[in-house]
Image 1: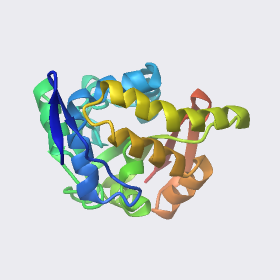
Image 2: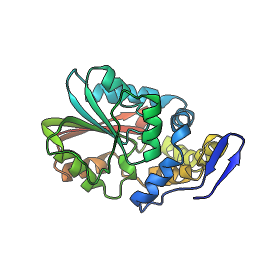
Image 3: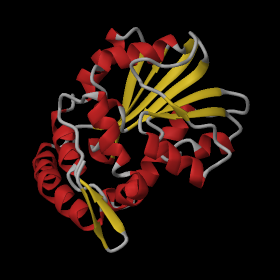
Image 4: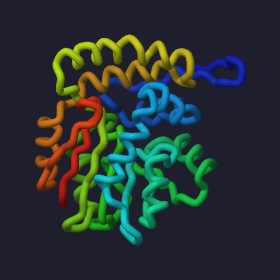
Length: 241
């Protein structure tokens, strides 16, 4: 992993490929940890905050509810769940993300976890959620099946993920914007600009809403439904164990 000092920002050049090897994904997110939340705001024009509100509504956290928050990063998705009284476990593959999360939110019990081999017993959680992380796992169905394994009967799955805009003219503009704007923006503000080349590629290669719903069903979940956010830029998939 090459690096250099540019002012006070340390630059990395680690990125994953669409093969999504776990070691590559972990190294890539290690390199963006410090500015990850800032980049999310910049890339989405702040929309990700509204998407998070919708995700929380879909989870419907309650006091005492056991929730696994996968790909939790620095814990921004876990914080509202904990504030609602839920017993949330923020989990991530990247050690640097976990370290940043523990520094910012020391009261949350961050756990290092691989979505394909979750270190939890069967039926440990009432809900499992993953935001913008399922797209980065090597085997989508296997990860969804692991989430099903650790969810109690009747528990829920909520997946927030970039998806396919429903209005075709906008879809074409959106795809061009991803390819051009994300790498340019990351070059100015990210500590690991090459990671956002992968981000653009992975969004464009990701299944659309109906196809992801099929993968969720194939992993053993039932009552699968989805809700489009911002015209389908993001979709919330919800299912029951």
